[in-house]
Every structure is written in C-alpha cells, then in structure tokens.
Image (spheres, rainbow, N blue to C red):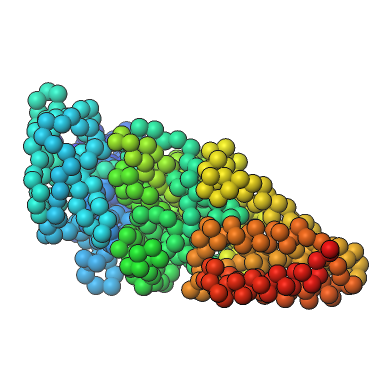
Length: 585
C-alpha cells in the first residue's frame, strides 16, 4: 500500500512532509494543492519527516495538504520517438503543452502513444538474454533504434515469444521473457529508468582514446577531445559559447546530439529552439534536428526542475550509448545546475562550502561527469557519451567553485577569454590556458599516430610553445616599445601570430572554413610549422610586420577555399612565392 502523508511546512520549493509509512531517499511523491497534484522529490528523510523539493511553484500550498508517495525515484521513459523532441527537465513533451506558459501540475507522456513503429525482430525464441540485449529494432529519422531487454531486469531470461515483423505502438507487448523461476515478464518498446542511477549494461568502460573530430581547429588540433571524453567551456557572457556549441553539435562525428539548456535565460533557450531546426547536418544534408533532442529548463522555472534536467539528459544519452551509438551531450550551463544545488542546500540549512555552494559539490560534479565515457557492450559493439558542459562564472572569474571543481574532473578545458572576444579572435578560446589531458594518454597517442601521422603530438606541443613565446614577447614590446627589443624577437612574435590567425582562429559563418576536416588541419599545420621553422632576412621591424601580415592574409585565403581546389593551389603558390622572397638561402 502506498505511503501517505501531509504537509507540515513550506519554505519556497522545500516542503516538510509527515509520512505515515516508509519513505526512501529520492522517492517521488505528489502533493495535492487545490486539486492539482504537484510532482516532488524526497531529498532528505529524518524520522517521520520527509523533506521534498517540488518541481513546480508552491504558491497556495497549505499545512495539511495531502501527499502520496509513488514508491519509485524520478524516472524517464525511454523508447522510440524521442529524436527531434523538445522536453523539459521532467521529460514532459513541450510540443504537447497548451499555451505559452506551462500550467502547474500539467504532465505529458514523453513518447507518441498512437504512432506505430515498423518493428524488426533481432532475437529468436529460446535465446538466453540479459538486460541491455537487443530484441529488435525500429527506424526513427533514418536512425536504427534498438529495442532492448529492460535495464531493470536482473539475471538471465529465456525469450519465450517475440512478435514477427510488423507495425506496433510503443506500449504494445512485443516479447515475453521467462526468468529462472518460471515467471513470465512482458516487454514493450518503452522502458523506465531512474535518472540519478547510471545505466551500466556494458562489459567494461576503458579509458577513451578515439579522437572526436569536430571540424574546429582549436579543438581537434590544439586541445582534442575524444569519443566518450569530458570537457567544459567556461567563459563570461558574449565570448561565443553558443556559437562554439552550435559548431561542435553540428559538425562532431556523433550519431545523436542532446542539448540540455539548464537554467539559461528564456530568450537564450528560445534561440536554441529557433536555430537548431534550421541547422543542416553536414554529413547527410538533412536537418540536424532529426538526430537531436533538446532538454529545456529556463531560469524562471523552479529550482528543482532545473536540477533534474541534466540528469534527464544524461540518462537519455546513456540509453542511446547502450545501442552502440556515439552520443554528444552539451549542457548549458552547469553553473545554473550548481546554483540550484546551492539553493536547496541553503534551504535545508546544511553547512555551506565556498561561496555557499554545498560542501559535497566536488563529489556531485565528479559523479555526474563520470557517467560519460566509452564502453564495450556485451555484443562486442562500442558506444560512447561525450559530455561538454559550459560554465558561466560571474564576471568571468575562473577561480570560483563551480569552475574549479569542474576543472578537477573534466579532461579538456576550453577557456573562453573576454580579451580575445574583444579583439574578434574567434573562437575566443585561449590557446595557452586551455588544455587537453588526452594528449598525455599513450592510447590516444597511438591512435593519433595511426589516424594522422607520427610526430603529431610533438608538433602540437611546439605550436603551444611558440604561442607562449609570442605572448611573452608581446608583453615586452608593450613595455619597451618596438625599438626596445631585438629584431629576432619581432620575428618570433609574428610567427606566433601566424599560428594564431591561421590555425587557432576560424570563421563559423563561412561555408568552407566553418568545418575543417582533420586531413586539412594536418596539411595546414604542416604548412604553417614549416614556415615557422624557416629563417628570414629583414632590415627592420616594419618589414617584419608587413611581410607577416601579407603572409597571414594569403594563408587565410587558403582556409576560405575548398581543399586542394584550383583556388586553394593558387593561394598556396602565392604563399610559397612570399616565403621564397624573404627566406635565407
């Protein structure tokens, strides 16, 4: 029998409930306010009292309002029909909602109940199966979606019966499994899973090593991320986080893209809804939205719903990973998620940590990032969830707790810088402060040596060293003036500018330059580094700047033309001619 309770106290979205039976941590309950049930989650249990965070506005809630506990944690519904959907943090289908604003207590079914899916069986009667094994598949937006043994099933089962090829709705029985005790279990195309528990239906989770090609030179060449890797993009407002996210989402070698708009301002979330349906997938030419899912929670939605949105997004990502797909999960911004954690922690009167964030913030962030990863599945296939979160530190302060704690767990750090954005050097990722720890992995080094060529890691290290030298000399020139430093200092500085302008900067709005394949990145990097290793003859610093400015323009023309086209070769010939004029014999 379900546990009941009554409201004993209300502080914002935190409600104290006196329960008349057993209650579990993270259990879902419904508080009825004026006849409307409001979904809530138990976040603390103390004796008879349960403290629940309400996913809705608590306006009008009174002492004595009835509460019903559901006996399960916050769950998402998984199955075909999720691609190209717009959900809120509780997986309500926003397209099914009435009106501009979500009415309180209004919840919708996440999938399409009426649609019939063309089911194709992949397993045979009599087979022994376990959680995560494929029973069949359907095609959704040209993507094969596997119908799996529910993740909640423990042990081995015998497949007693499975439906033949045909069209069935998601809630219709498609298979019957028998456990070792002879009990039958009906399976449909949908299944449920609690969002705060990782889906672990895989054999092992090794260290990821495959380069995730994004077409963005600042990432692929300078600070690569891998399939199943983790990264984060901190930066103040106006530094180009959204444009960089769009570029990665559109161009990355991923099968599924999930965007979690977590606590962003409403106008920014509207931009995501407006712009993503217009983006084209460069690989297929079809709308990018066909393989995209958007989880949206604006900053004016209740705190608890904001906190749930990132877990909902990650669970959906793990579901697709279990199919052997490459999933890219982008969260914007994890700062709002952390602020939601802080708000609830403060209302619970817990001991505050730095900047009043919870004391266990680092553990919460680490556990969440750990859910991403590259896995070997039971059937020999591999799948991955690559997670890139953005952080919006107040005033661009990269020393605040969310950035610092994320830095400890994320393997890639892309520091967006206000100064670079002001100088129109996009993407405004600081090439010196940013890093990728995957460059240190022997597995990654072996993969890159095979995919790109031996010596690539050393070449990237040399580029970064030249950029550091250029920055140091730039500071000296600012203090001492152009005449105050030796001529070779000017040459070193302009060689670093050559790397910055030609390799680090990229035009996200140019048809050609927006997406740079890895073969082209390798070619251009070799070209630039060959020039940087040359010695040149100059009379004075004015000649140095004039020469390198002309050379930079010629090399950038190569970036704007189709690779190995006639225009590309013509621009390259111009570069070669300029270099030969000044090169020492």
